[in-house]
Length: 451
Image 1 (cartoon, rainbow, N blue to C red):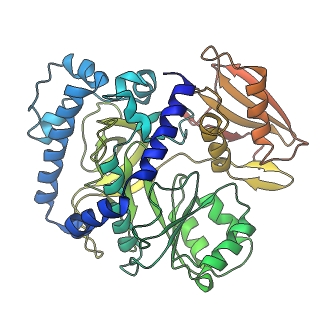
Image 2 (tube, rainbow, N blue to C red):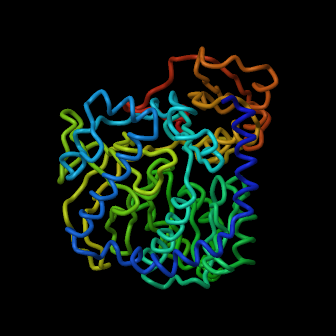
């Protein structure tokens, strides 16, 4: 499937999605499932684990029988349908890496090509994109788990009549459920002063955005509570508790963190008492020793996760690329049981300097995200890196040998950056396989001038 065929399938999927009676489907799920979803994390740990093993068994069997990538991968280790009866059984399966998903696109990571009618992409925080098909029921369940997130992180003050504003790359699939549980949207390319004016007019109860974008609000010395905002949830970039507390004081509202990814959905959420609770029914998280790859229940290690919602492109034992510190069973004052993450060592993103202003890396990641979807540049799987080498020069490193991009497409890439930075800054595009590493980590956006 080439780029044009993929875009055609997405367009077809959009029309189909618009024609579905989401009100009816979601109302049914709310009546039958929402109460159990809201209370799931407060269940005894043995009930949580029993649910996880059942889900893991079902999704592994489905993937083995229907998804070529997993059929090949698991056949090599002698997997048989029905083999998953415990976490120990599950942990015998091989780890999945991002390059396998990229290289398997499109035919090997779905049952049918038409599954890409509903799809999503990783943000490229690792510098490489991955395209995933998403099934409708996963979208619905994710929406209901979002309701639980807002209830829990707002200390049970959020309800169906309140609005959540996403300042993000793209809007969520569902805008509301029969006019309730409204999810509003602004792109991160919106100037912060314009976003604040919009917030003042619409008065959302919760805002969800990048920490570097929220930091821009602090410069205007406003109290978001006066705009109707009770909570801000930050995500996609690493932020310290101290940093969030500082912004909370400046803006007059609570600021809590969300640890998530496109591949695994919600991983862990910071509660009002400062603990990161694993979203145990959204994904099953293992933390592995960095050297032995054995699971650990206490301490620091690599995140390997399994999406428990989506079967269109199953994500099983996926190497997330992050390092966290995990703690075993914990009973928190917020009422959630189960495991917690004590520390998240995510990727620290650099800002780019233009006209003495700091532009967050997330904005450039959004642009790169849309090179494929909006600008129609055929770069699925292309590794990129945007590097500021001086105040007046930026280098865009693109993976050498993967695509032969036309001059027109290269100009599109350059011009996309000029929507964020001054045209006085020179932009060079280089094809290379020698990407810059910082602290043994790859970053898609780097500022080398230390500003």
